[in-house]
Image 1 (cartoon, one colour):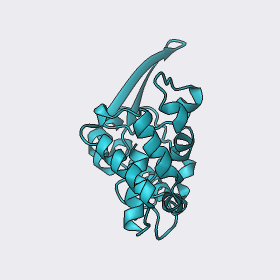
Image 2 (tube, rainbow, N blue to C red):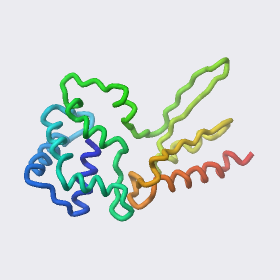
Image 3 (cartoon, rainbow, N blue to C red):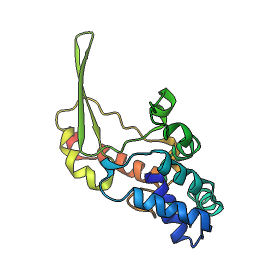
Image 4 (cartoon, one colour):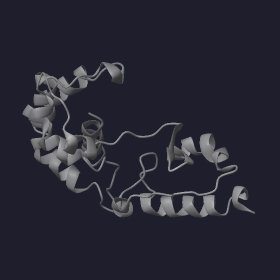
Length: 188
C-alpha cells in the first residue's frame, strides 16, 4: 500500500498521467486507504485496484525512474515482488510464506532490544531506527558496549532516503557509520 502511494506520488511529481481506467482504480485505492493504517486490508477490491495501477504505463515509467539521479524517489526494495504477487495477497485466507516474509520490510521505530544466551555468554542486541529523526532516541545505547555491528544494505547504493529524496542512502549510511565510530562513546 505504501509503495502504491509512493508510485502515485511520483507520477504526480513527474507529470506522468495515468489512463482513465487506472484513474478509476486510483479513486478506489485512495478511498479504501483513508483513515488509520491499521484499518487497511487488501481484499479483492483493493487488490484489483492496486493490480490495475501497477499495470498502468505511467506507473511503470515512474517505477523505472525510481533510482534515476534526477527523478529518483524512495521505493521499498521489495515493491515489485509484492505487486507481482498481489493476486495471492488479496485472497481471503492469505498467509505469508517464507519468501513473502524475507522480502517484506518493516521500518524500525525507536529501539527494539533482544537478549539471548549462547554457551554461557549473554548478548543484548538493539535494532534501532536508522531514519534521521530516530537517531536521537538511540545514540545513548552505545554506553558500555563491547561490540557494534553496523549493517547497511548494499542495495542502497542507488537509492534515496525515505525522508530526503535528495540524499543517497549508501552515502548516508557511510556518514552515519563515521559519526558513530568517532562518537565520544568510543573515545576510550
